[in-house]
Image 1: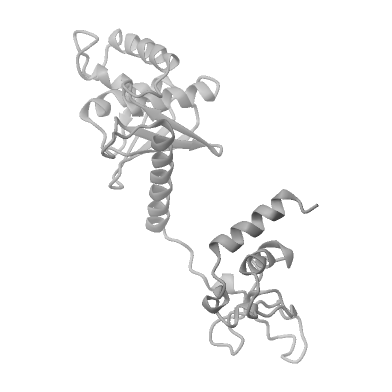
Image 2: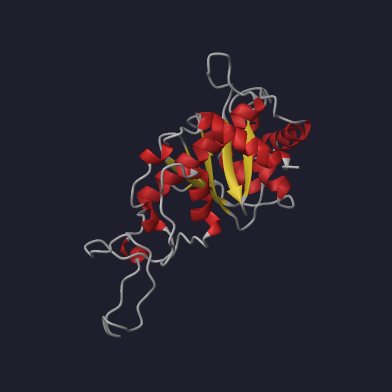
Length: 266
C-alpha cells in the first residue's frame, strides 16, 4: 500500500505545479549540480525532485567553490586545482573569496530588518494589533545566546503578574533613591510610569531568564516605537539595578542610544 505521505505529496504536486513548469527553469540549471553529475532537465521532469537533488540528494554544498566570472566556465561548481593541465601554480579562486564583506551599515540594516520581522511575528502570535492593523502598545526584542526575549507594556495581554511584581519592586526602590534622576512625588506620576513600558519589561525579563542579573552583558534592544522621554529618565536606573549591562536601544529609524553605569553614553 502506498504510504499516505507519498499520496498526499503526489496530490499536491498535481494540484499546484503546471504541466509545463520545466519551461520556466533555465536550460543550463544542471551547471549548479556538483561536478560530473549527468542530470539534465527534460520535458515532464518533476521540479521538486530537482530541488531535492540540489539540496541534499546530490551532496549539494552551498559553500563549494565556483569558477569566477570572466572564465568560460564561470559559475560552475569546481574543485580547487592542485595541478594538472593548467599547472600546479595556477589555482582557481574560490567564488566566495570574491564576495565583499558586509560593512557596518549593512550589518545594522540587516539586524534591524530581522528584529522587525521578529516583532511582527510576536505581534501576530499574541494578537497585538487592532482590527485596522494598528499597533497595540510597544514591543521590544533582544537576543541572548540565541534566545529571543521580548518586552511589552503593562496594557499588553502578554504582560504577566511576574512582570508587574518586578516593576513594582523596582519602582519602589527608585522612589526611595536619592540622586540626579528626577523623582516624582507620587508613584503614579511621570517618569515612574516608564517602569511599565516595553523597554523596562524586556530588561526585567532578560534578568529573570539569566539568573537575576545581566552583569557583563552587552545587549542590543530593538523597538517598534520611539523611546519616550520618561524611559530616557528611568532606563539608566533600571540598567544599574539589573547588573549594569551595556545596552543599546535602537528605534525603528535606526537611531541608537547606549547606556551604562547609570547614564547615557551618547
